[in-house]
Length: 173
Figure 1 (tube, rainbow, N blue to C red):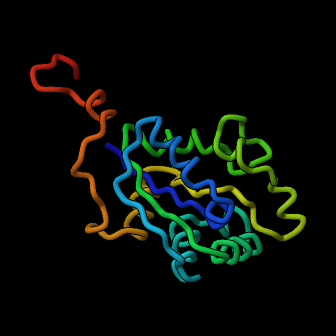
Figure 2 (cartoon, one colour):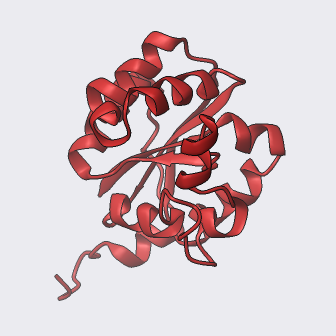
């Protein structure tokens, strides 16, 4: 099973939509193996967005600094989700980072409406509801950054796992 990191940003927590959005991940069969509310400092976010995510080269120094400030406007909820091809599945469910082009039915398409053009013109953060790991390598690094091993609880089985794992005596592969 693959793991991915999802962080509900301050705008999601402040709007009170965490449970509603979280239920989408549960309904599709992803397993929550870790979750916590936190209020990280700038150093934590610097490591997350630049050391791991290389945001400066993708979006520029100004938007990077705006993002660091926006992430410190309130607490976040970080979680690890586990499932078959979890990173790609979560990215598909979340939708495009530029919420202007995020498809209806995706989390960003349903809950966010600002665009990269708007935020760049006004030097404000893009309210994208949540962060989701971009690829499996990034997910591994982010999970190690946000959680210790003793905060991860994967020793239970969901009903979805029952149907996605081979059972003894089964000829399925």
